[in-house]
Length: 126
Image (cartoon, rainbow, N blue to C red; front, side, top):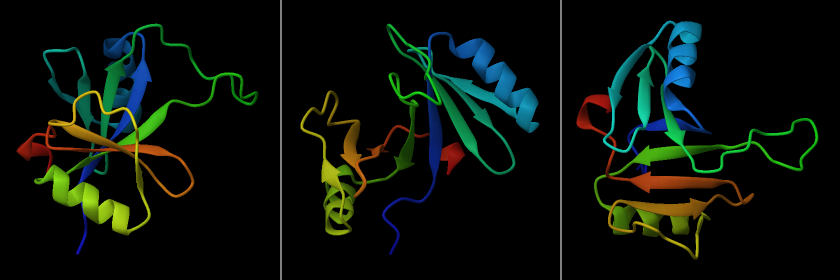
């Protein structure tokens, strides 16, 4: 049984609107909704993207790694504790810091990449 039904690819940024407009145009999608905190979500035929404004955002310095890439997966779940437990059974590790554990659980995959399990992805996206 899958832990999550669907998800978003989340892109950290300093200004969500131009990034959302770019990716909507680039991928032939549309801005689907904006959250109260300024996250803008783009829907395409094959992927959902979330542009998330981050205080003091610094773009990656690829190919140098002094500032690494800023992407993570947000995975839609109905039951956070059960999904987190199942993810751990599959090899994930919970992050020590959980800023909003009632809304999302931050986890690391076996290679250390962060991802979030969340109940905050709207039903329309599922």
